[in-house]
Image: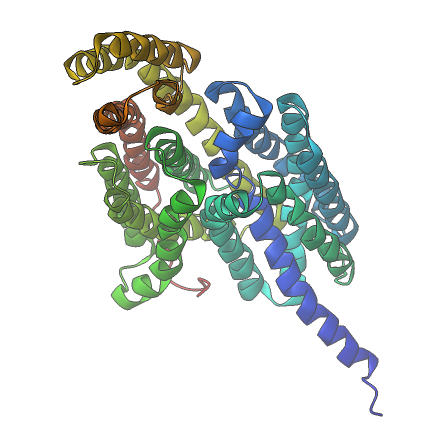
Length: 463
């Protein structure tokens, strides 16, 4: 039997470690939005309001934004493998705690711990991927894994929620993270000191903040509109939002064909994201087909902007982990900014839509060809549903289900229910409109941050 030399074994171990570390990067960044399609089910199981459940997202992104730069300082200038492995282990343990959470408070606390472990994992993986490959390939792998994870997070979460439950989102992360712990320890990086440390790249990071805030509308609010507003199942919503990662994946090859240059691509990406969000703000109906083209624009914009801005923020700057930490901090600070700005807007718009929705429902009920006593009972039941679901788009079916109707009146009742659902879908679309338009404005505002960038990137960019 032929034995591998020690060098050959090391090469094989490193080849297995690189994809595991890249998968870890994708996993941690997917967690910023992976619970999005599970939020309605989390609301039903753990209780609370839309504003409260938003903290399941805010807690993770806020903790990651605050911890990642100190974590990068800790990793800079030393062998970061132990800290990276410890961070991945904490992330795995916190993921298990999320899966077992029995209350909203416990889930939010576990998400915060997840982010702390994820911060050390992300900056450590950047250094280890470079050590295992080389500067260009390691940085490119780290950036690409992050973009794919960010875009694919809602899709993966939605499919797991529909197939199993929201708990499964966190269960599947545990074995992946456990395998990545020894993978991180197999790559040892000699400490590298850079006494001439560079200042953070301000403008690319500001643009990342604004674009991430804008993308929150597409990755968070759209899911709530599809599931809670338009009444689609998590799996159909997941398949619909899968347009975003697919479009982000094909953006780079398309950009290489056009050869417009990094700055032009980034500017075009900002415009595409803004255009996609405007398209989501004015859908003709609640049919899922009207969400596909706008999401394709958002996905293309995501693929053209985030990796270009991240590479520009990292290019020729050391310590590498520190500047990688600044980009992660900027992106997740942007997510928090987007949630803080947009959540109050759409919840207030939902509340404001309640009175005209009640008036429209009353009018439709009065005009329905049903006996007077059934109209009175139905009106009372619908009113109770509207009051019980304050701040959310109500499910009117229980009010209809409680009616005792003759067979000849059942058809009229079913038609009335369809008409009322259509009315609520329109009200929901209008309630989310301002938030999508604000997101589009944030994407265009990111263009202003790109103007001071005077030095074009012409060489050394990862493919």
